[in-house]
Length: 473
Image 1 (cartoon, helix red, strand yellow):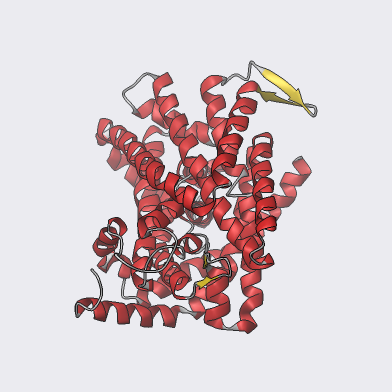
Image 2: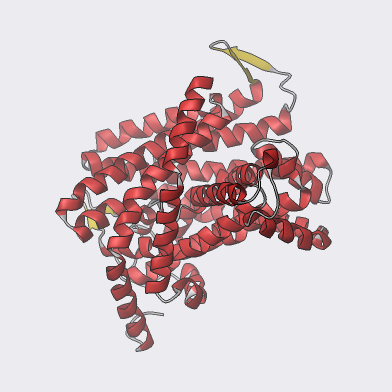
């Protein structure tokens, strides 16, 4: 296993090297400039559209349901475990780079949502299909179809072996273990490896629940997400606000540490300082930020394409709010809570870092704080499992056609991946997820850059018609 970890660690370093980080940020900067800082100028309008659905428009679910489906996939372990992992590995400064990536990522996410609706299709079964593979093929032309297929393959693998299944169920069982059996006193040997009873029971329960919902398809997933996602986000933000308010005097020091860490003014693990700190903070911040909000990854537009709307730009604005909620709000609060508690410097790993921050910050007994975080993480991760099943299923449909038997077989394969996820190591799981994320982002970002002119023209047309009162506000 150690040799395997070394191999995927090397691959991860290559995939998430400086070229990809620069490409993703450059894409966001390019779109931000071409769209006139749409993420600033039209954020209020976007938040309004998020709650107000159109009266007409083709699609399968409402714009709000499409957003909740996307948020169900993005607001997951990345917000709790991913932020903790980034800050622990890259120092407090990683949080600032996560925010920078998210700011420009809002423009990227806007473009993804717009293009998803503009180039979506309806298959022979009447299902609405859209996403990077379709705006690559239909927007760039048939000669670029290979790039769309590349995205679909990486998206399929990401859903099946990375961000959609293994990382999420692993995060749930780790949190359950931290609460119910932190000393691993009750274990069973499976294939020569000891696993706690908590891991086995929690893994089985989540697998069964996922199966019951996943079999129902997009409408059932959207219906569940529309109820659970808003409630879980409000609950989690409420907990973080309590932590911040109870320790408000510590905010200046925490902010100072974040800024110093981001620009190499404060050494981190192993005495690393200067340029190395900046690169380590930037790499972890950008990689974990993309893992969390998926801006540039190309996953959210798959859900956006199902929205009942006739205006691509309007859905682009709604899609953009996903990054604002996920990273600018939720991840910021998680990271600030961790830095204020100093939990990232205690040698802890994964969810244990955030658990320590909650235990330190919340004015409740430690047991209660741990339980709250466990429930939040379990719900976050569970909805991500549901959302990514839909994403990866759409990738499969693009590669194999709308064959119901193939899709049904894949659903059971996906459920099997959820079932085995708890028994893999945390380090290997996160590195695999990082690799597939990076490989997904590459073809999608190339397409967004090449189609940035289309996005700009479509946006100008929508805003001019909106100003003239020719479209529903």
